[in-house]
Length: 286
Figure 1: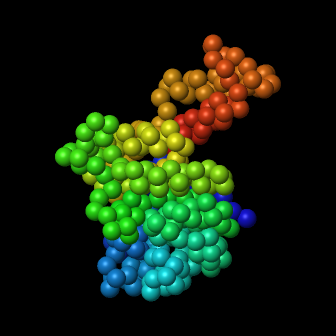
Figure 2: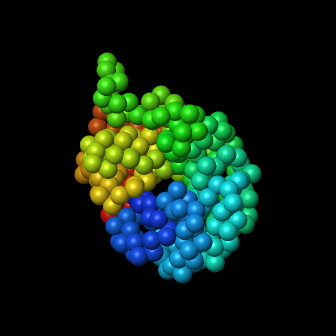
């Protein structure tokens, strides 16, 4: 049975596991803290990072622990450390198979957020989403491009021209993003959008987060506290959206099937969109 944990809000903030003095600050600023035992921690610092994780007392409802990939030397030790905590969601770095997700869930009992960031992981996104224990899906652009021998996931100002816009993802990362979003939706998992590495690019961060909302992502990962407010604002529906969603849901109680409301046709998809709007409104109010 798939674990029911879901992020309580849209802004997920990475925090290095070897910096326990930052745990509390990250928790205060973001909806969810991702305590990172992988990329943010040097290999020789990981034993101490695991000790810090076990000693921590963050809210399990608002904490995700990123562990090292299944085929890494640190993976087993990460899971052992996680077992000594009350945290209920684990992000598996570089997920490449359903078996890896099932193994992590069996070993920890935690909900698994499968981070898809390799070519093989992208190709197998659907089977990963279907795995027992998979609660959510996330994708990563930079590791994906590195694994392909590429250099950058986004167009530069020099390359941008015609339909291309500087800072936008290249076609392969866009495909990977779509693959993960579709796989998550197909199997009833929630999806998390990737990080925006250009911390100073507030406009780009906002545009990306608004696009994530439009595509059904429930959250966006952040690498800096300054990105949290931008993400929250993007995911929060405005007053007009909330008013329309509430009107749709109220009208649906006395109408069966398709009906007309303020000149617009309302059917199942519109009803579900209204429900999603109200969920985002509730999350932004907490």
